[in-house]
Each structure stands twice: as structure tokens, then as C-alpha cells.
Length: 412
Image (cartoon, helix red, strand yellow):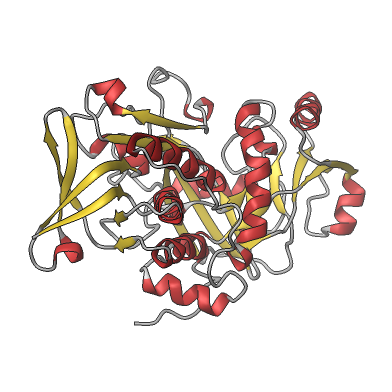
């Protein structure tokens, strides 16, 4: 069986569905293929932090400046996919006060709103905080429910004419005359048999797996695993970040009845086959306990690992936490003499819409299509109704561990 499409998007995480939505809204025919349910890679296994940009303000001001407007956009268009909790950066006894000042100056420089409070004042507002918290910087962080966000974005793409195919693994890229012309797809996209999808252009949005799509594509990924630990915890409101150089156990994400503690950063050779080690769990719990005492005494209700899609072509020797969290659009015609395909790598879930816009701009230019991006202006379908959003999650098999406790009961 052979099908035709304008653009074939491979990968159904936040960026992939964002690309499909953007192209469909511009009137481009698009088919998205994902080998599993949507969001089952990095997106659905993240800690779900909606970045204000403060985490990267001093180390990556460009990335921080990308986060600010994208965070505001998601708060405006994504409704119940987002929780606008606010966030604190905490200076705990023993942390370097010079780092706090550096971050404060960097936030001011890149335009991130903040307010500094004493530890005593912060504890009046958030009684769960440790008595060792000396001062905090309040920033407009929040949190993302990734399953809902990915599903609602895919629903929007479909409503604008995109074909979204889950459980449809790409098994081969077709190349003719130095140009990618489509792919062979198995699973549900082709029924019992594989199907051929011919496309004018192909987008590789497979995240940490981007370097494994085809050996003809030079994509130098340096994936890193990280563990998240969900413990029972009521009444915690803001996102908590330890105000120190990024390290293990420096983020606490508040859910209605849980706290998600994260995370580690350990290089892995394979984004699927890696050890899930007890020391990571223990370290994250211990370190987060310095911000919120008592979490170390609570039995974890859920433990999951995710893999960061870090791109590091010239940084293989750099410590993983030092690799840029920015995103990169790779044109393989210029890089590998292979036309008709690009890869989008790196980035954060917070900036997935911006990443998708960059890809759609690139693709429409290659296809000679003149159409502007409107994804920041249109509210996602079902955004104000959690029940509807959770139906979309089931429709696209997008349920992931990052927000399992928030979603409605699974429909089997």
C-alpha cells in the first residue's frame, strides 16, 4: 500500500505533534507517525516543569529568553494542560550566596520577573519549606501535564487536517537521487502490512532517538537519563528549585496530592537500554529533603526515568549538565548531502511550540508555501475541560508517568 502526504513527521512527542499542528494550520498536508502512543519518549517522562527561563538565565541567556514568551503562550492557550503555580529558587544553608546574586542579576538582564524574599517570609507562605532556607527568589515558573499537552496538540493538528498515526514505527527511509522521498511504516498505519508513505519533505522529531533513525543522518546525540520520584504530599504550591549550580535532586514539582522529586543526569549510550539504579532514587530523595523536610520519610508512589535529548556535536567530553538545553534545526541537505529531510533536536517541553514554528518555517520555505504561523494565537481544543483533555489522552494513547496521578481513570 502506498500513501502520499506533503510532509511526514516522524516522532510523536511534544515537538513532533507541535510540528504537525503548525504545518496543518498553515494548510500543508501532514502525516505524523509515532512507533508507540504519543508522548511516550522524553515528553511524557519529564518532570513537567514549565520554565520561566530562570533556571538557565545565567548559563544560557538565549535559552532563557526563549522560555519567557513561550511560558506565557502556553499559559494562555493550554488551559488545564498547565498549572500556573509560580516557583521559588531556594538558597539553603551552605549554598553559595554569590550564585544567588548571579542568578538574580541574570534574571534582571534577560527580563524575567522576580521578587526576593527572606526565608522567614517564604516559610509563612509555604510552611513546608526547610528552616535552613535562608532566602528565596520568586519567579513565574509553573508546571506542565505532558500527557494532556501532547494529546491536545495532536487533536488540534487532526482538526486542521493532519493525519496522526500511533503505533506506526518507521522501518526505513526511502532515498532517490540524493533526496529522502518518504518512508516505510509498519503497525497501525499499514494495518497488518507495512505501508509506503511518499512525502515531499520529512521531519525527524524523534528526540533522544534522532541519531538512530537512519545511519545516513549525522545527528550527534548525547542522551542522559534522569530519575523522577513521586511521593505523597498535599498542599505544596510553588515549584521549588535549589539555587545552586544544577545538580542531582534540585527540583520539586507540586501536584495536587503528590510531589515529583527530580532529578539525576547520567550519560547513557542507548536511550532505551540503561540501568535504573537505586542510588539515583536515594540521592534525589535525600537532596530534595533539604528543601522540603519529610519527603525522605514518605514511601514513593511512582518512580520513573526519562532520557534528555541532548545534542552535542562538539561536546562529547563536556559534563552532561553543561550541554546546551537549546534546540537545533539540522538541515541534512547542507550537512549530509541528503535533501528532503531535517532533524529538530535538543530543547525543552516549554519551548516545543517555538521549535515547531522554526521547523514549519523551514519546511514551508523548502516547499514554496507562503503561510504564517498562528499556533500561539489559537487555544488548544478542550483546554478548559480536564475531562475532555483526558479523553484525548486515551484517544492518542498519550498517558505517561509524569502526570499519571492527575489524569482521569484509564479507559480500557
